[in-house]
Image (cartoon, rainbow, N blue to C red):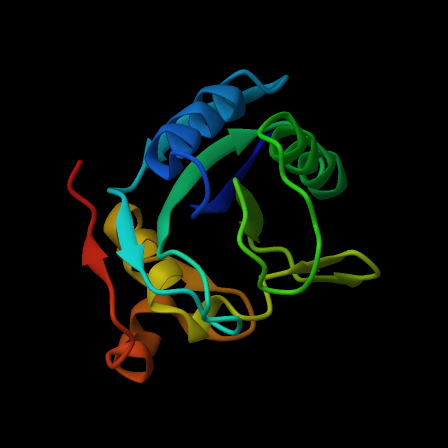
Length: 161
């Protein structure tokens, strides 16, 4: 049985766009997984700890036979391959992969919360998510597009290389 999952990608150290492309290649190689779509890349300033470079962000849609826990572990492994070091919350990073949605599942356990707890609060997540899935519904919250107004003031732009 396979499930559609959405993964947020972000980076602001090294060569962020290259790292996002590499992460997509690695996502496509996960066992029992097909990379269906990847959004455009978007640039946005860092949130939280602001003294760092802007981020490049995207969202990928996967069809996977992996469980949510297995997929999360695979995301951590891809981050590690790309040199991710978890120094402090909202720190600069070479790659950040977040499991946004896993089918219509609602999961709340240590280390894994789906839908991602801040999915509806971030323009750099909602814009690329809605680009590749305009009618996506966030389980327990409703249509993702309903939250665009609440993030309209957050700076975001298409990233041109």
